[in-house]
Image 1 (cartoon, rainbow, N blue to C red):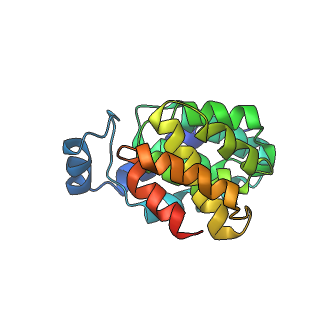
Image 2: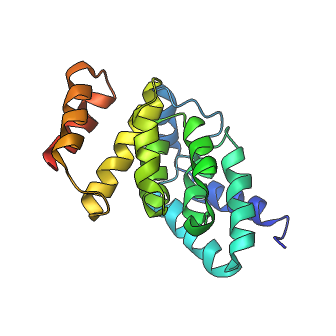
Length: 186
């Protein structure tokens, strides 16, 4: 079973790597998290990697990832959780729940890159997400699509290109730049 102090130790490491300048810039840019340490993504990744190696057990990693993801106040916890969650254990339903709670483009990008693109049902997930009305869900779906195209896990078909083009014709930020990037892969 996971040591109850693991999440607390990770938070201490975030504090050790804090960067006030980045944290202030994120706050001024409108980041909604009340606890922003301003850690660089490379530092969050290193902390998560050390934690993965120390725990090793998928059940413990799963519990820790869920605990960190549930901390919606902490930017760094939300960034670390997808790095710890074993992709083989995430169901499509859980993936959709996580996507529904994404609050920023940064969190969506990281979630897609570190976890969702590795799910066996990633193709089905991006299709569900791009069909949603909520902008952040659409963004997450198209970001996942871009990851899948870049890794060769999804093929760039004419039908898929037509869907992206139709979305791009009516898109608002933050989707406009992302959709342009997706279309470049076709």
